[in-house]
Image (cartoon, rainbow, N blue to C red):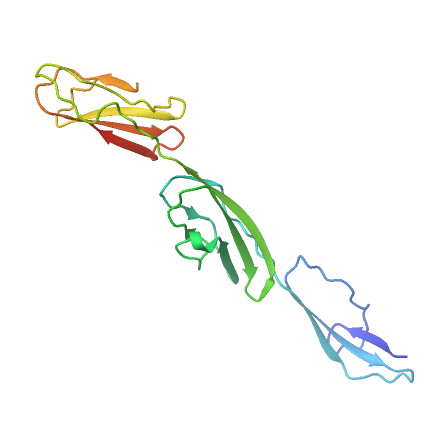
Length: 219
């Protein structure tokens, strides 16, 4: 029967214990030299044995994101990109591109979960994944009791939004070209001051949790 002798270098004459385990948490290449010794004690030439430990990259898809329906989101915005790794986002059909760490989604209409897979460029089997949830909020619904009105000079006009939800929305009434005909209020209905010319009343409804998610309607 033959036995194996292990050496740390090609020129070493001192054997070492047979390597059986390697620290998989330390990336790099570990090199040994091995010979075969037969029953007569004859030893072969040394043969190199290399053990490569490739780094497992960290996938970080970032914090969950909240956007307004019809908007896009930037995934992994501001996070650090590693070198010697490849990135892949899924579902790919909801992305404008998929060739970088931080990517932009298409306009979204429903809540969507995205998965980021990060792989070692030299060894794709060394990979990790992370997920990020993009929550999509619906714009407020505005339903006015009138969209045109005719009054006599010196009279005011009343307008009401019947679908106002005070738990989730904030309202702002404005007017143009005159700006002093609408009393300041966050209520769903208003009565203007006395009018002496044509005006346009505009109601803007904002989501409390995401003020940039808003709807408008004119009278």
